[in-house]
Image (cartoon, rainbow, N blue to C red; front, side, top):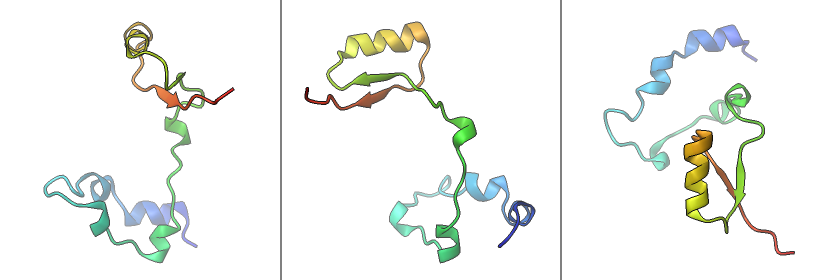
Length: 83
């Protein structure tokens, strides 16, 4: 198994950033090897572990108020559980 230093040498930011920018690439056209399918990226440092959530029946007006007054960039909408 390759260590993280080997992976950093194999890939650069350009390998990820430029793919699909100059031409339209459909997700169906992306071919991955078995090794690539086993790879993952830990996005934990970039995610909010406790995001603002609202139920799907909340009004759009109230959601807009949350975005404006709290300064949200994302809002997690969850289904209403029948009670």
